[in-house]
Amino acid sequence: MDTGRKVGRFAVEHPRLIASLIVGITVVLTILAVLPSIWPRTFAPLNSLKIDTDPENMLPGDEPVRVFHDRMKEIMSLNDMIVVGIVNPENEKHGVFTPESLSKIYALTEFSRGLRWRDPEDPAQFTGVVEQDMIAPSMVDNVESGGAGVVRFEWLMSQPPETLEEARAVKRKALDIPFLKGTLVSEDGKAVALYLPITSKDVTYRIYSALKQKIENPSRLFPSEVGSFNGLLDQLAAASEGQGPALIRDIWRQLSSETQEKLLDVRKEVDE
Image 1 (spheres, rainbow, N blue to C red):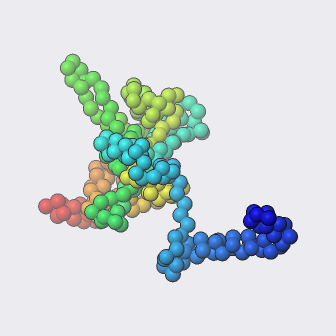
Image 2 (cartoon, one colour):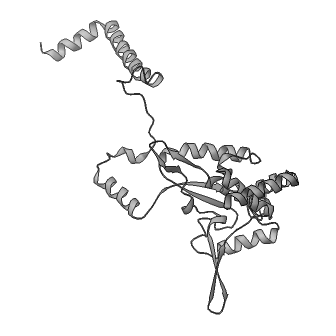
Image 3 (cartoon, rainbow, N blue to C red):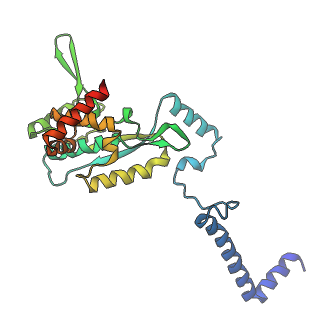
C-alpha cells in the first residue's frame, strides 16, 4: 500500500485526532499572527498584521510596469488625488452656487491648504496636501479679455460671494473655462469638486479624518487654518481690512480694540 493511501486511511479511521490537529495548528498560527500586532516590541522578531489597500502593491516594487509608472509620475510631477465632491440637495435650482454654500467651500479649501505635517523620516520635508497643485474655486485662475489686446488674469473666487448674483457669476465664469467644466464644476452647474493632491497614499486616512472633523464642526478653528503664529498675525491683519476667511474675520471683530491694536503692533515688529 502506497503512502497516500496509508495517510488517507489513517485520517478516515481517526477523524477526531485529525480535526483536533487542524484546530490546534490554526490556533497556534492565529496566536503567532496576533501577538506581534498587540505587542510589537515584545514580539519584534515576528511580523505584525498589516492592512494594505494600495492596489499598486499587488505588483512588486521592481516590476517594469510599476517602475515606468513611478518614473513618469516623477517626471511629470503628478500626485495621487483626494477628490471631495460637494452638493446642495436643498437647493435644486442653484445647487452649491449660493453665498452660503460657496462660503463653506471657501472655508473648507482654506482648511485643506493647511493639511501638511512634518515627515517623521525627514523633518525637513512635509507630507500631506500639495497646496500649489490644488484645484478649487478660490485657487484657480479666471482668464478673460480685458479689452483690445488685453488679457486679464484673476482668481475665479478670491473671496466668498455675498450675493446670489455674485455666486452665479462664479458659476458662469467656471463653466466658460473648458478644463473646469465637468471637473471642478459639474456640467449641470450644481456641484463642485475639490481636488487635493497628496504626497503619498499613506496620509489619505489622516486627511479624510481631518476633513470629516471640519465638516462636522465648521465653526471650530483647527490648527491647519492658523498655521504658525506669524501666519495667524497675517490673517488677523487681513481680517482687520475685511479680508480673509470669514471665521478669522469673526474672531477679529470679537477682540477688543486694545487687543486689536496690540496684535497689529506685534505684526509690524515682526515685519521689521
